[in-house]
Length: 531
Image (cartoon, rainbow, N blue to C red):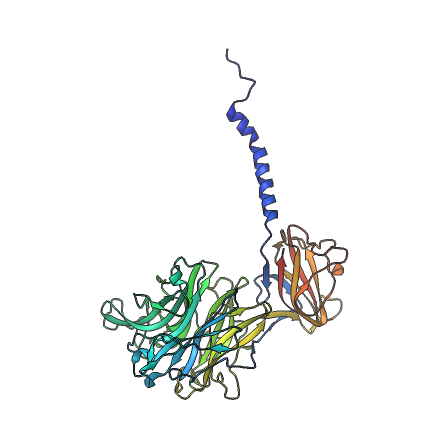
């Protein structure tokens, strides 16, 4: 007769130890997590994506403020700069140095078709005083070409755009700088218009990619018939293709480079070339690009003559923002103003500020009184964001490029103040015991406070106050962190520190909670959690 051994087998001992091992692993993970401070998180209130609900409030738009010394770069200082406009800018966060690339057009005044529309380079230590170095990498009309860094291919029409992305993590140092632009190029013996790219180690010495165009574009007459499937006799009649407006940036959410640009949509009778919508294409290597995807077109809320010139996109604090260039061809040769678009995923776009343009045309017949040409590279500083842009004194699509005043300037926005929330003047609903004047509240969706010690509020409470309250996920107030315990935040500041009486500085509860902002005649723009 066999008996069980009183000594457990190795397998049995291992099985019994599993719960203890799991507990030990969990404790190690918790300790490791506690040792690593959480990355700061800013919650913007430019839209309601992070808002659970709000009561007695309204959203207010915030326009950009032009720098009083505009333009920082003038056109016509060089013979190849009859008109300048489309541009990109980069600020080195370590040195503070600025690099700026801009399109310069001289058209028929150039003896060489490849010099009709070129890319030029400027640099600055402060983003205000720019110099145009005499690099002389190219000639112009028999003489030195100064700050020209890229010329055209010399095809059927002109080269357009100067969209530069700086890629610090590029595996190949020679491709640290990447440029996207529109040009004509020969592919398999046939000339096509479309997307072209170039690479540089320093932003000055550029090498065009050997294959071009990487994406073919429509180029033809208004109301041109849509081609049939398999039709080849009109190689430039390409429906739903990208056009000559090209703005590139790096999408950190998807880990790809993305280009947002204008795409022709067909007209009421089905003919091509009616109006511009906005589309997106993306690439992991800046060479192989996806088919353009149409994302945004004028809708019923827009006036009949409105269309999009292009829409540079950038990502900031968990949101995609588009500086949509609103084009009206019926006025002044195609005037262009700028409207702010917002998206949570970069694909579905909201246009909540159609009546509150963030950057309308300038006045007094200045360099930007006819068209404002934004870019995808805002410069984010500690207390402000700078938006550089090109400007024309006339329309962008039907004016006389040879007579414009043009230049490059910038406008500013106080850090993270794209739009805010403030109380309505009066709430008098039947469910209120008495009317309220200038009082409202915003309750955010639950967030994990683990690893955070500080909560700051970006708000203008001049003449009013903001009180911060914390609630559990079930909507019940947390003792010691209620609105009655909150120290009122007053004045205008980007980083009001939330405090509560009886709580030590830097003391936030653990776990998930809802943040509620009690507003008294104050505007709140953002909330930041930091370790």
